[in-house]
Length: 226
Image (cartoon, rainbow, N blue to C red; front, side, top):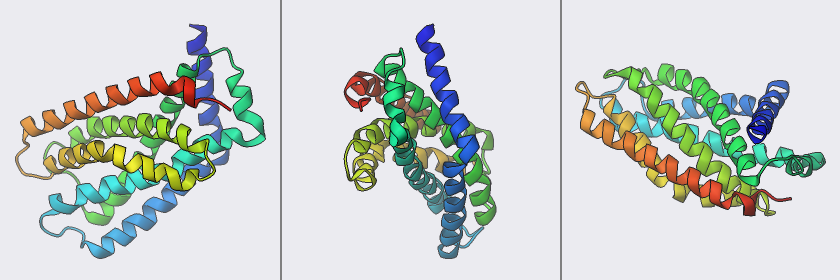
């Protein structure tokens, strides 16, 4: 119970830090506006066969915004020896990484709240078939991004080329999650909802998230170091 309380304090610390500075959320908003504008120039809003291109635009915009966030979320803890103080807390390395995953997860959900309306308006792309299914899709995909991204960001931050290394490590590992996210979202843009395909990809993402969480838990003692 004490370890859980400490983990919650670490999550609150990250949330309060972002609330005070707004560094990451500001970068996300700017990136969403720029990316949405650029993509809308290449793909006319409201054009036919929206399901063929919009899911890819939607998720790749979020994934590249996530990569802007991940490195900074770890690097700012190394400034002024904050990482050293955090590691001295009476909590296991596993709980430290899980706390960071959950803090990043909340930030990524905020990212989705910021980006989604921008892209939906620019492309006139509100899902036509079961729009409420977008919620579980967003929850599952963002958790996968948080768990996998936090794990690899912890690894990359310990190097001198973390800005370059993180995308190289992260994008290949995210390929299954990206595929599932795009295919699941595409189903929502057909007039008839294919429940078999929807359930298959949702289950796929759930399994992916479980595996990434287990790997993070096992590798945390080797990654959460000074």
